[in-house]
Image (cartoon, rainbow, N blue to C red; front, side, top):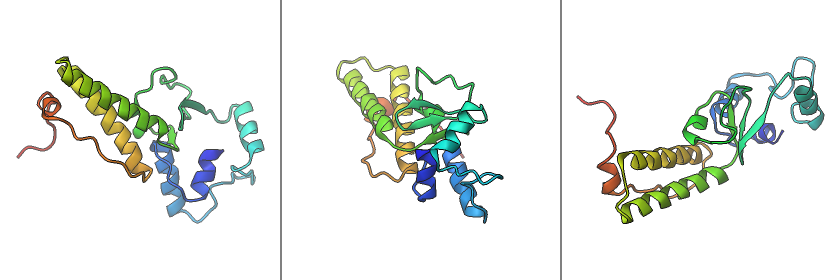
Amino acid sequence: MNIYEKLANKERVAGGKGKEFAKSMTITDRNLFTDKVDNDMLSLNFWKNQIRNKKRHLHAVAPGIYCTSTTCGLRTLVNLIECVDCKNDYIVDTVFAEAKRKEAEIHMLYDIENNELTPQTASESYIKIQAAERIMNDLGIDYEPVVFPNEVRDLLIPFGVVS
């Protein structure tokens, strides 16, 4: 319900499903917070009925990250890069993403300091940090981007269009 309250208040919601719903709000004239029989999506009773009758599914992937897929495999091991644009996910805050970003940065710096940095650990840190920063961008949160040291950048495979 918190997800739809944020959307109704025109607050940002990240994740593929959150972005899709917000986009739908801008291109339609009808109220998206009621269904065809005028049930109010902002009421607790609506959601109790939907979930109990298995019309909708919702589970927490991590704090502030919710998934609507019954086949989601991220219930124990969360990979933020899979949630950022997942068509089934709503992301309502950045607490978990920021914690994962900071953790990845600390591990990256530890690996550099202890001469344990490998291409795999460099890319893992890079992916986690980039995913968390995308979530923070999507939610309009100010943050200082992580600057990747040369040791990390030298191990990453460059991507993009090469002419």
